Length: 160
Image 1: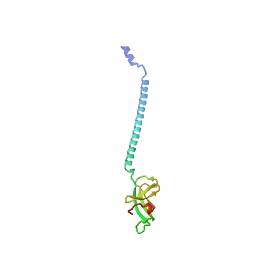
Image 2: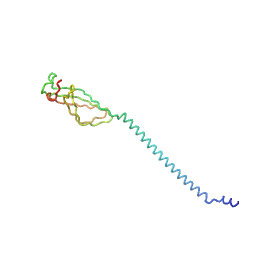
Image 3: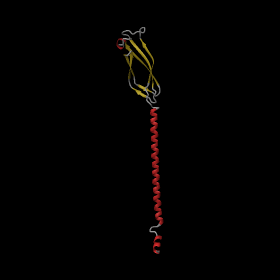
Image 4: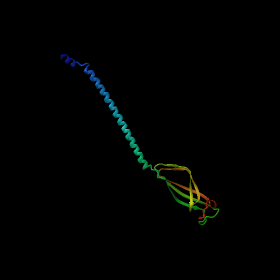
């Protein structure tokens, strides 16, 4: 029995060596856990930022950046070269239209050449070309259109 007690008292490896190895493993394990936590925090913050940005864009799209049609208003419409308010054959008639366009959108837009058609009692009596331009955000733009018509060609309407 005495021999068995001696063997138990003497370990096979020094105690200091085994303890330092365990400390290094624990330090490396703690560093790895710390890196994983930092990585998770970074990914979490990035995901939260993307989510907030997506919600902000959706809210702005449906409120501020909601695309609306421009409002067109005819301020005045004048016919020139009428003889006592009647239209005679072969006489040039000039139509002057003062038109204002309001862009209610938060962004400006560019429009290309277009055409305005004028109807009288459901029949087309003329058309005018509108040059291209730019409508600034939330501004009024005024245009004055002069269009000459020859009564025998341009006015096929019998109700004039």
